[in-house]
Length: 331
Image (cartoon, rainbow, N blue to C red; front, top):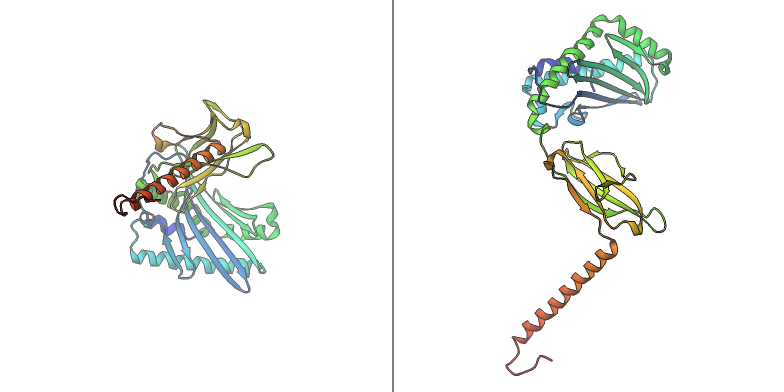
């Protein structure tokens, strides 16, 4: 999102050094997408702590949305108003730079990513990347703005202009080397309970579209787990099935994760296969689901339906018999 946002965040989130055992690197990202069309701008922004979105920008009201109570830190209402005014000022200056000084003509999309990462024993690394229409334009690292080759003359002009502004460049270096690390420490401390929670996965099996004649696509669904690292594999006994295809781990609306693992097998070889799930929340007890052939499942379901039907008829018969006069047959 916002170049000028981070300096104030460094003041508003003054937290101390915090290390709660997170895997390296621990990162915070500010992402901005701005669209210029018909002489007007539309700005969208978000803040991400690792892969968890913690902040967003409400472009209608011009306010910051804190997606978790702990992502707000200890900001007072007045400080929050100052922060939001600073964001609006940034957007205004941003618009003027690309339209008035670089002479960009609409419509076009602008993407900005400001990142800082904490590496144990190596301190923090910070950088900013700017893209136009999805193509790399300029970047900032080690106190210098540099053009990307595909940015052409405008990228070179942009870097020349910004690098001449020493106050702006020093501020950018400060926010990446000091303000953002302090924000990370605050988020680590305030969000410890949420970020270190353990949520057990739920798993179930299904069949996907047939890969071909006489073949089955076995699908293992694993959902609702946290944290993200998980191991899922189709197995035959203790032997891993190397044909297992694991999809991307995707987020759920509640901040947990889900994925699918598939296996393409001959229909006659599906019996005896199982999906095994390993996750830190399971305490070393793997979750194992055994594949049941579809024909067997069909017979089981049929038998259950028949049994329920017979019990229903018997219940009705007994109920009606109790209402008839003594000695009269039901039929």
